[in-house]
Length: 96
Image (cartoon, rainbow, N blue to C red; front, side, top):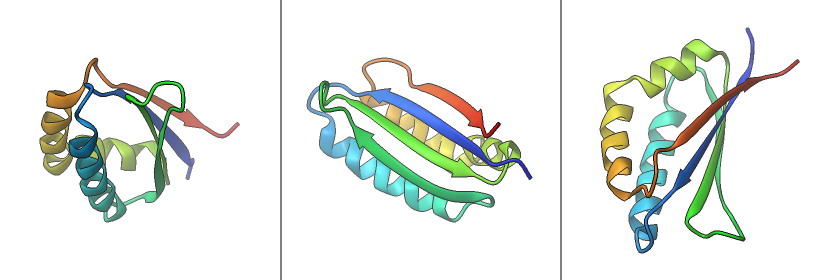
């Protein structure tokens, strides 16, 4: 088992903060029930309030891939895409 951390950067459109927060709660709730999910948190930039970073930890890359490609998660991504100012950036990292 190789633990992985996933870092997602999202820059949202001005004025979309409440919708973003609602989506984040829904996605985190769904992820919490996904196989291999360990933890997750979302942070907001102090310098740029439209920039949000989500950090999640998964038991292995296969668990993350199953979640991100699930029908539930893809549906939420469609909602995210409507409020993003630019495409989200995803980085997968592992412990050395």
